[in-house]
Amino acid sequence: MKKIIHFLFFFLISISAISQIQTNTISIIPQPVYMLKGTGHFTLPKNILIHAPDSPELFQTISILSERISLPTGYHVSSVTSQSPATIQLFLNDVYDSKLGNEGYSLSVTHASIKIKANKPAGLFYGVQTLIQLLPKEIESKELVKNINWVIPVVEITDYPKLGWRGLMFDVARHFFTMDEVKQYINAMSRYKYNVLHLHLTDDEGWRIEIKGYPKLTEIGAWNVKKEGEFGDFIPPSANEPRYYGGFYTQEDIKELVRYAKDRFIDILPEVDVPGHSLAAIASYPELSCTPDAVNYKVRSGEKIMDWSGGAPPKALLDNTLCPANELAYSFMDTVISQLAELFPFEYIHLGGDEAPINYWQKNEQIKALMVREGMKDITEVQGYFTRRVEKIVESKGKKMMAWDEVLEGGVSPTTAVMSWRGMKYGIEAAHNKHEVVMSPTTYAYLDYMQSDVISEPRVYASLRLNKSYEFEPVPEGVDPKYIKGGQANLWTEQIYNIRQAEYMTWPRGFAIAESVWSPKDKKNWPEFFSRVEEHFKRLDFSETKYSPAVYDPIFKAGRTSDNKLTIDLSLEVEGLDIYYSFDNSFPDRFYPKYMGTLTVPIDAKQLKVITYKDKVLVGRMLTMPVADLKKRARL
Image (cartoon, rainbow, N blue to C red; front, side, top):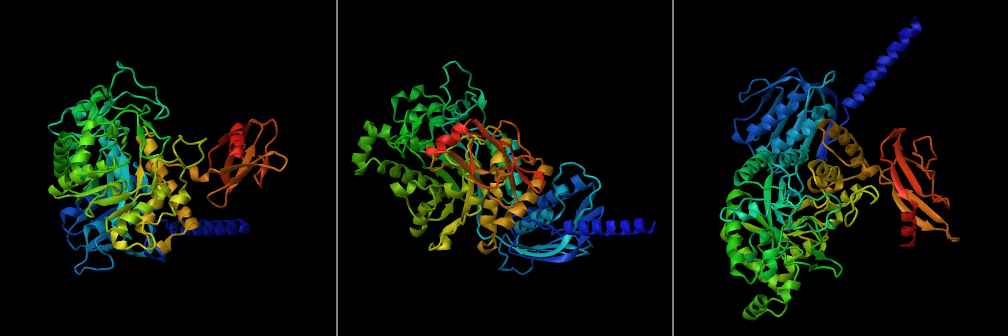
């Protein structure tokens, strides 16, 4: 009996210790500037009272906090503006704290209280996001979770962003996403303190915004033929295939999205991509083109329309550009920009400017006459002329123009902000020339890139693994930081057909970019960051948000021995994983051979299967690598 009592005593002590460890686990993304962990925890009572200042800007913050707590806990949550005792207390500072700025906050959790202080409502909103991350992972559930000890670790946090522009670009032109799906994306990004949603609203595949006076933009330009498979290589649609796939946002829809985002302290940056990427507009209004055959053009459904074999700019197989020599193009842009300026309060309007082909311009008499009239010596100056004219239209509406870095090549005024996508170098060049710059380089921030090997991901131009995204540093050495507004990640959706795949491509790389634009550079630490990522995987499971497990996938490197035998080396992004494999067409688990070093491929093997475990728990996907692919890679 005594032994049983001793056993139960130590068992309960052990359980208590484990519970205490879990209580004190803090995994915040992005990493706060300063954090001091205490001992013990605060326990949420079943009746929760939130105290906050009487401010319209805080209404949605309180509403979001109340909903996030009440749904999974089942607890009653109410709010007051009086100074009565409250469970969670939100304060706006009477004296401005310059260290916190407009988006920073301080968060204090003691055994008896929770207090969040900030200079501005945005800071309180971000403090609330951190508070929610301090609660158990089950807080992310959209339904009641029972038998959970709803506790928050004792902690002191002081936090503020490194950069003012922390953005995600969501391409809703290649594939249309509904209002609810865009809101879903906004909700997810707000939890990680992003504050700019860049909406790519127009492209060759669709025009997604109502423009009054140009009804065909949405009657014709918003619809194409539904295709599934590998975008860019689809069979061109026949003339009689129905064009019902797509959609658009009315101006009332846009106003609603702007309000919804603003309630979460997110600005929406609209992009209308011109003069290239404009096939949807030209199919609607062929008179905007220089090319007579444009009357036969249709909105692109994913068939090949560009030849990239000669590099950039591409050779167009049809003319997808607005005509810089056509005055109708500028009256069209004046109307579009006027309505964008009224719909979107944000100070910037993005007008694209990327990947505009010139081969149709080169043979066009209107363009040749324009060049003579304006004293242009080279065809590449034509886009610069177009850009400067639309820039003046933007400025006349009281807005600032932003564009992709190609606009630097044709010349643009210093008042135009540059979004650098072709690596960091064009952003550096723009900053040296006193342009405002947002860094969004393919090198680190293109979320449409594959996250793992091509055998497991939809094929696109390149791969971008999580650890590479985490290396993103938006403010380069040797650049005056006052010109670097911030950074963002871009999600192009050619190969993304639905919101679940959009989530899969965004997370967890969106965590890496969030930390790169919010947290101090000296706080970044890859192993420590990934330990937090794994905790947030659990949170995403409860929130029913899809994410990619590609970080657990091995990296394959094929080679040859001196006697020409095929070899394979496997490596990993993260430590602490075990790889198991088979060459015999069976499905390996942790009882199969464990990878310990270079493998020699059996001469008759047709495929290599691999899978990864962590502490005997399956974490990776089973990948099948054809030996034929390994042979090709070995040759390369």
